[in-house]
Length: 162
Image (tube, rainbow, N blue to C red; front, side, top):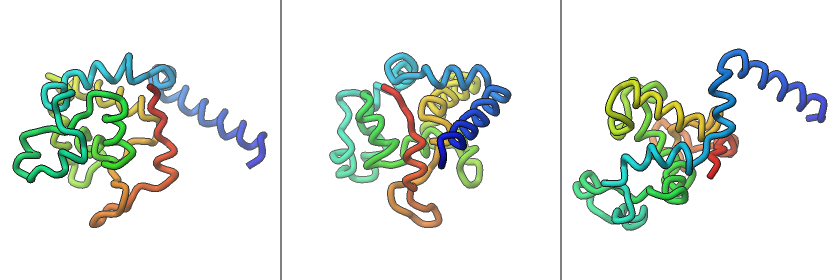
């Protein structure tokens, strides 16, 4: 793609975003793990804090125990392991409000994103914006059932800043 064409595409994308979501596009550029996402995740520390098992250890637990013990995700690297790898898309599947999933069924952790519907929706919007435009998807690393594995293009949309 030529530089001129890239500039036109970027300009068009910027214009489209600024017409549709001016506050969100400006805020999305400034969202970071430390200032915007960690305060949301801090509400999950009781089950997903430093005392929780790391992913590989958690996966070794029997299914009944895994339903009562959450995996660790209190730091950027732990949290991102449920976004990009090894548990690709798990964060999105668990926190989704149902609008991205077949049957409109919310993920099992959506209810913990806030005390009210409004707080949950706001926190989900913040996390989606932080991940990056078009980065929210429910795909796993490898295909499973009817769901395809995540593509390189989908992974490249993740822009989550520390």
